[in-house]
Length: 101
Image (cartoon, rainbow, N blue to C red; front, side):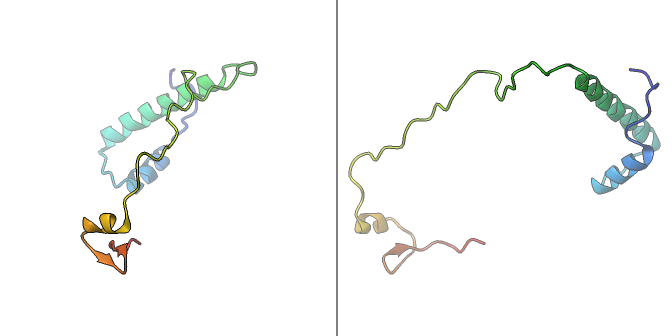
């Protein structure tokens, strides 16, 4: 994990990213962040070296399936009048809501 590998993130890239994020970094902060980001990316390159050809892909850590219940209509439906009785704004038999863009 030393500095023997070539830097993945260059000072120019860090400068560009900090501008995009609207961050003002001091020179000492830039050095620390540059070092830390490159170390993190080095770990990913180590993970990339792991042999996974015979490993079954896993989408979840636990073997969980959909646990939601089926939708069921319960009881009697409201009439149009009952529905509109509590509506704050109504127009021509419908509930009127603010326009959404």
